[in-house]
Image 1 (cartoon, rainbow, N blue to C red):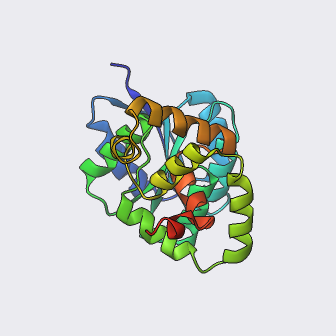
Image 2 (image 1 turned 90 degrees about the vertical axis):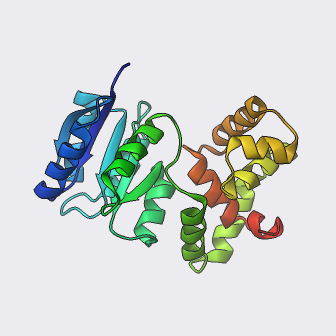
Length: 223
């Protein structure tokens, strides 16, 4: 098995040491580099080619938000998992909109952080439906009207079936549940999700969920 290549980014050397110790015990994860600031990330990614970046948000020079945006703009962008001390925070929302595949809390059990890295490397966002709803509620009060108009304009590019799948993703449903609810195969669901991502220029399911919420589709769906 090819190990998952992991880059650690945190300005606290004790946190980095703890993460390195935690990840070093996993046979399928290889730490290919460490950075103390977001300013170092692009160069390190270019040299080490990680599959996943574990990224702190608050750093002194270039924070994790700016670093995530820069990374996700690359054609060969690695997946980014944000490290945070908050369950729901405007900066976490910013990172998710920028293309982060999810977030983990710094006080999360070590086994769960290792599992998060594995899941993101496999293409699964690290956000439970409960956490997704919490973040969306947190986002609801800021510039809602203008954001809804922009989101609806973007979603107009979808056909009816793709729109249904986007709403289901927004509800936090897995592919198997979407397939059951919409009477289609899991393979067809995956195809629709891929088309939604491509049409909307998004990176992952988390961004689909946020856009569906911004557009008010989840309210219309009765959830």
